[in-house]
Image (cartoon, rainbow, N blue to C red; front, side, top):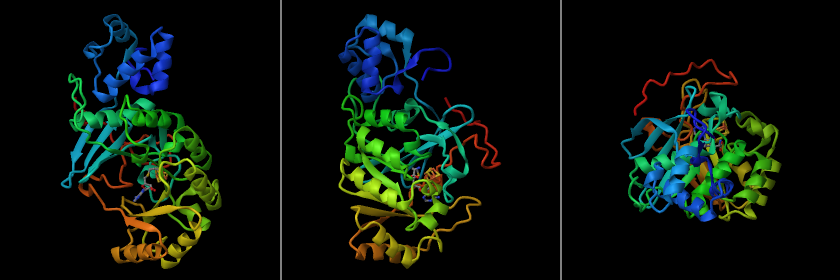
Amino acid sequence: MTTAQDNRVNLLDFDVQAMTDWFAAQGEKPFRARQVLRWIHRFGETDFEAMTDVAKSLRAKLQGSACIVPPNPIRDSISTDGTRKWLFDVGNANAVESVFIPETNRGTLCISSQAGCALDCSFCSTGKQGFNRNLSAAEIIGQLWMANRLLGAVKPGADEAGERIISNVVMMGMGEPLANFDNVVSALNLMLDDHAYGLSRRRVTVSTSGIVPAMDRLRDACPVALAVSLHAPNDALRDVLVPINKKYPLVELMAACRRYLERAPRDFITFEYVMLDGVNDQDEHARQLVALTRDVPCKFNLIPFNPFPNSGYERSPAPRIKRFAQILIDAGIVTTTRKTRGDDVDAACGQLAGQVVDKTRRTTRTTIPLTEVRS
Ligand code: SAH
Ligand code: SF4
């Protein structure tokens, strides 16, 4: 990606391989690429002049040919429970969201991969907005870069990284990560790279609605922890809730999960299951799930549905969720129910609406102009 203002290359788009290739094309050695990568991601630096161990002549060259431009945060909200949500401008009146969830022994950042989503799951507000475009690698990793900076984990000008505040990243924000494969993999590479964020593969999770061929590609290119949005125990219901199921039905999805586990950093798949009152939350559904996942080592994460206007669905009552979970637990499946965090700043799962100009014209929702721009 180049910036809108000029044709300088945005170095946030490069993982270590791409950075090394780009430096090689300028006649520079690979260690220079790693040095610059460290400055950008470990220390949050955007000014080449501050990169003191980089030769002066190279710094001058970089000034002319490259830049470091993260997405612009246009809103920053903090919930009473400490959850923090940012809205990032990604141009043309589109905005995506990221959420930071602090917990006692970890800090999780949930990031977006697309402006909108084309997959149109019936209970998802991102899906209801339609699809605008894929985020660039810079816009994806830029959410982590910016969150680190805004949380005070890095301080530009200081040549040492501060405390690690973000220990986990989940790609569970807006969009389907595996529908933006190359850019997501570049961003994942940076999350894992010791010269950048150095996160453990086990602490980086991609959540997918089940794009089977892309699950195989991810296993080969960059196996990280995998969460699969199951949401229904049979094809008839899943075809309605998660329409991509018509293309990749459950038998294929389960086989892809088993293949993924051959290389996965964790020895289980996490199945996400949204609890929709009277739709997919009956005892019989839980029993079908037990049978469906018999050959797939897995954990279940039940997500109480987060309502949004005109969704047409309601959240299952707490006793129903409890009973549903118990059936899975009794069958020996580790099952957790997601706590709703950040409700007061609409930061809960499935509420990451952002603002998207719907190129698919799925809805007539008018886009709110970005008037809250802060410098
Ligand atoms: N596109 C990917 C990742 C983003 S959504 C995917 O579908 O997996 C992250 C999770 O939130 C998914 O399991 C998704 O199905 C779920 N979700 C979407 N809308 C929701 C809502 N309104 N309430 C609760 N969970 C929701
Ligand atoms: Fe897209 Fe995931 Fe929402 Fe489905 S649940 S529409 S795949 S973001």
